[in-house]
Length: 168
Image 1 (cartoon, helix red, strand yellow):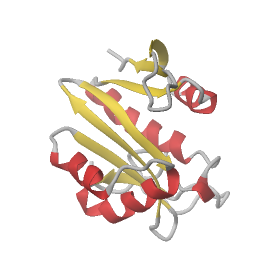
Image 2 (image 1 turned 120 degrees about the horizontal axis):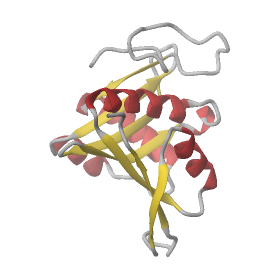
Image 3 (image 1 turned 90 degrees about the vertical axis):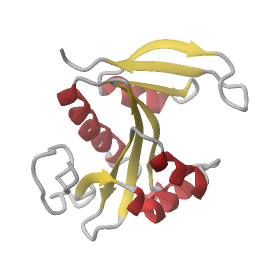
């Protein structure tokens, strides 16, 4: 699917939410969104991916991304996955700081996971072991703790491994 759709419902397109605080739409992202993705990446992460890394993401087969936009079509969040051999890994999820705590990441991930579920694709991810908010988000989306990678991050923090099986 390449068209826009309302967040939470991949089959419809709507305008801004009634609350005015939720993103208006979610759509599949592509290399054409590079500028928006770079802006989101550098706004959201202390150690962001470079322009080259984001561009390379799109050059390798299996790259799949989603973009959340506000009512004016400005990007407010994204999620990037890599799909290989019937599995997908969540590589990055980011929300503009001003849009955090407005369910942008949850809605992006729910939308992407619904598509993966329809295709029977399992999803995996790593998250910092010292990030309980992200772990709660992933658990709420059906991910289960499946392991741990010791000292996975540069600062020595462990990674908690999560898996989510698509319905069979």
